[in-house]
Image (cartoon, rainbow, N blue to C red; front, side, top):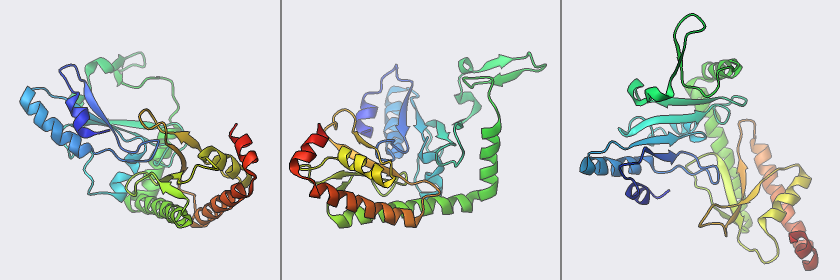
Length: 268
């Protein structure tokens, strides 16, 4: 999202500007601080109070540990709410997610349900009432067990392994790296040469080596770009990272060895 274009579209009917900290497609962190600064100017000019919601589903458990200097959270005055998925880099099984508001006043009363059939008034703003507590307990356990430094070490290891894959792919000379170094620990990449192979063929061939690496097209205005994406999880080791690079190189050599008519038939 372009901050200037986004804030330019804000009018009196805008509820908030939603910024993404960790794109699903390439792991990129959007510039929340720039959006905040532009909104500060616009709100002063218009008298509006347009706020920011940060969708930190992927990046919320990453940025505070890898990029503590990055301002994307409640340090910015117009950030009023943040959501994060515990079942991603919160290291908990699905499905647990969190939404945090800056103050109680920032949570509209219209979103709060009050029930008293259990004997006392119990306010809730979840979308479902009957839900087990196991995921909450698991999240609590992970936070207590790892602590700040432990979680930081895990995220640093994930990022280092992402860099191993990125650098390994760059050395082959066959790929463009689409993802950025600062962001979710993942590597999104595309082929430099599409005359004989495409990303979908690479993805299909990698399955023969036991790897499920998705290939997909980018969204509107970039649909001509197809990428492969490797997301680094906690248990993904340096050995696996190096093996993946070797297997990708092997796949490319095998595709090169195919007769051109076989490659064309695969594309059909």
